[in-house]
Length: 274
Image: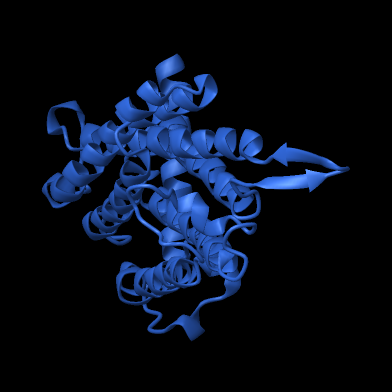
């Protein structure tokens, strides 16, 4: 009885996704053919994603970070300065906006991309697993939006100094955690579907994401090893522990590259609505 009920629910979900595919503007040729709602909910073709959406996102996102870097008043180094330093409006008084712009654009783009992926994996995944992926990425987007305005800085509040990093760091930790777990959930869905013996459809060619997955995996493991040491060293004020962290700023930038690599691999591997 449970199996029939669950199977019926799955079939209804697949049918709704199939009907939604019919509404997708897969023949649209330029950004003018889409509405704002289409952009938000990933209602566009793969051709538009790879030829227009991703290049535009990368241009604005990287451009904002580059502007923040160029306007940074000190000598900036990826070995000693975290990404968040670019958005510190007390240090980078003229260039912090570039960092905030990048995160806001990244927040919108990730949300749109999440819906784009969800529309294409919902029919090959158990409903709860696909929903879990979407929810984790949505929380990641909320975290990016907050980090865009809550810098790793000190502010004067009623004649006292308040450390914004008390808020910044936990949000950043939740953001990264949700992104990692969301990406893991997505990979579970894809590898699960790649198993023909268990009813998989091989909707996605796994071989296409292996290179980006290796880069992403190295970045995640390196960050997972170094970041906790940096946090502990900061709490204890221990220089020895901070040395063990081995350039957490560098690994933060490597993780950033890993994110872009992961998105690129997924965008290439996941086919369109057919």
